[in-house]
Image 1 (spheres, rainbow, N blue to C red):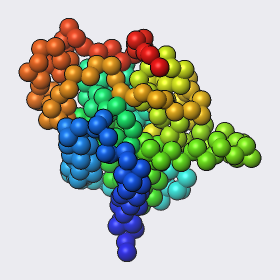
Image 2: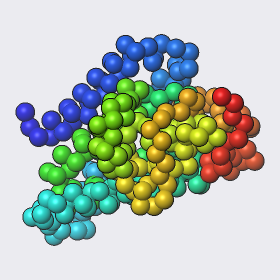
Image 3: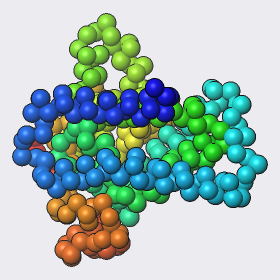
Image 4: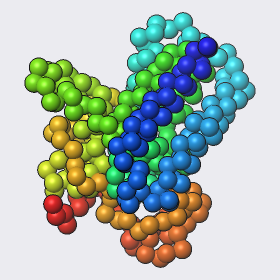
Length: 293
């Protein structure tokens, strides 16, 4: 089995295992997830790895071969440590800032909105974003450039590790509870929760409002590394999990509006997805105040 096949098989297996465990736990059989939610999740699950990432990679390789031919594989001999650092900085850190921007800019929020309007967590939440959110994501473009420069082999190992961490951070299995339950593991938990994204820290990001004392919807933006939140002052660690999730602007839009905005827009004038700018634009940087436990 080739390294490329293994690289793709690892996150696929993790996704399936987590999804099955969640299903047996009853996650997908309550009334919070609608058919519209499932449509968003399943289409997003296919669109990013099958269409967007390959298209960006092919375009960058075409552009590189046409205009920057001498640089093809020019950094293949660079030490592995430096290559890993390049992906961490140009992919994962850039994704942190892209994610953070989407919680500051009402325009960017409209592309990130599908990720937050669902009212419960689960591994299928991982890829919920508008197509344009991923198509413009700097980290995917930078990764394609690094692969063109000769770092493709390292990427085969970097990507499944990153996707595994992200999938686990969204999963209702809450693997980090084991670390918090046993006092002897608390020092290890202290290191892990400040290094990578965990269910506790990422669930806090998806929490409805900071008013509950646990949620941190305008922080904990890290994807693979949580250390970016530590460094840039957006971290909140409670070792707890919110009881309410979502975003308070919840006008239910069809899946094709949420995923294809702004190419397809809402017919409802009350919706923020009715136009690029509306009088009802949601400001994601403001904390929702009308919270009742």
